[in-house]
Amino acid sequence: MTWTTRPRSDLSGLACIQAGDGPRVVLLHGVGLRSEAWNAQIDAFSATHKVTAIDMPGHGETPFANFTIESHAAHILRAIDGPFTAIGHSMGAMIAVELARQAPTRITAIAALNAIFERAPEAAKAVQSRAASLDGPTDPAPTLTRWFGDTPSRERTACKNWLRDIDPAAYQHAYTLFAQSNGPSRNTLRTLFCSALFLTGEDEPNSTPKMSHTMAALAPQGRSQIIRNAAHMMPMTHAGDTTNALKTLLKRT
Image (cartoon, rainbow, N blue to C red; front, side):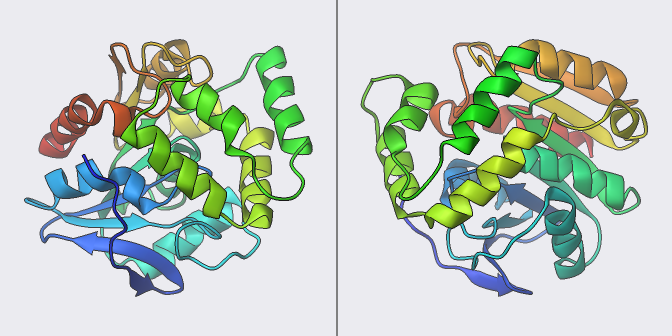
């Protein structure tokens, strides 16, 4: 899979990649990434769906402005008409759940990939410490090691370039929001009445399989799935398995 840059459309101030036609699917990436992180899924889903992959503020080609998970979800809902399925990775997973909370009659289904939920105290302390240490240009090395280890790959190189290119203020703002969040509340999950897939990697140390199983058990139509030998960047590193799991959700919707 290649991770080349794609042309953007403007969606009420949000830069996005659009492809295909049919029922709409909205893809939401994580902190430090950009919409091209979904390249494999864009290609796969655009055969049957209208795909909109949105750059988070300060990422890709969307201008940076202060935002919260709630305000960004509200912006997306204003920008997109009609019903859609929301698929998010990492911080994008938080936004996908928030979309369903704000607009339960418009979100047909969600998928939350590598989503955090009720971090253990030591994990919360570690991520908050990383957020507090951010100052100036982003050093991608620690993040790449957490995501990929030390093994070279095209995916690792693509993420390295994206992390180097991002506005440091935008990265710090988004990562701080991510660090301060503990994931969706139990009440939000209990009132999530659309079909909901919680998908993570078997080797994911932070957005753990236990978290996905717990969230799925709380959601009335929740289902969890764990991808073998995958970790945090599974939409890129395990694109085939991730895409197949998401296709099953779309077929059920």
